[in-house]
Length: 214
Image 1 (cartoon, rainbow, N blue to C red):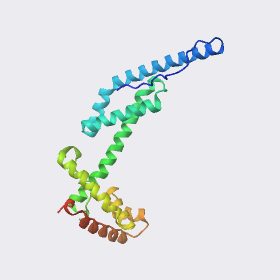
Image 2: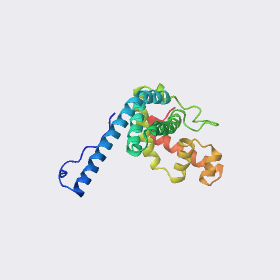
Image 3: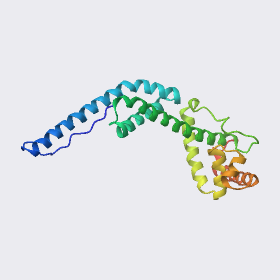
Image 4: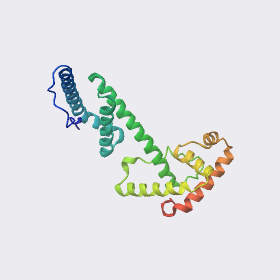
């Protein structure tokens, strides 16, 4: 991946003497420095790309997702840190990439907890949606399509729930909080959490129909 800034068109030629000549010289010097910096960062990105891709693939176990993460990290490095000293690029790049990988895993964790709820019903005693979350690397393309459809339906159904029911469901299922933690977050009793969550589950089960697991 290469990055560069196009040279501005339509600028007046630097042919005047005195102050204008000095200004033109500075522009030429700045242009040369910019071009050199672009070449340096493009060279760095070319050298790091394969290693970074392998790093991301190991972390997320999906080649396409890994490529997106690496490219996003490259764009952010160029956009925010291209003017930093060259020896700082590698640690900055890998910090950006690692943050992206962490964000990806957080999104997957939420998604997995939701899909476990679909498959298990979410009302079993001592049920742990995090411990039983499926491995995303084992899903087939058809399962991924079904997952996206189910999540869209869930989002729509959640928007129609009463606020307290929605809050209890999202804290328990999306955030993985237990009943006690959800009670603290909502500022209600554990009994209220159980009531709100149970009502939410029944409403969602009726609304989602075919997506809801037996």
